[in-house]
Image (cartoon, rainbow, N blue to C red; front, side):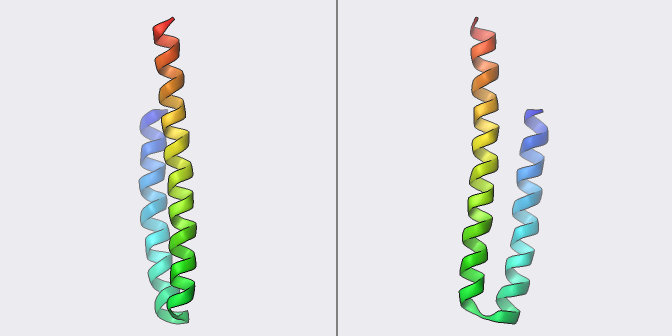
Length: 63
């Protein structure tokens, strides 16, 4: 499960990176900044999910 979350976060960062470049080149710099912020927020959310699942595994192993 941990590996799956890591792969999904990497794929989503690559996907949003290409979308950001596409929209940034077509619609200008402002939308590029907005999409970078959205992609970064999504990546941070996925990394937070990943770290919280790591904490759960750690506490289960500890008990």
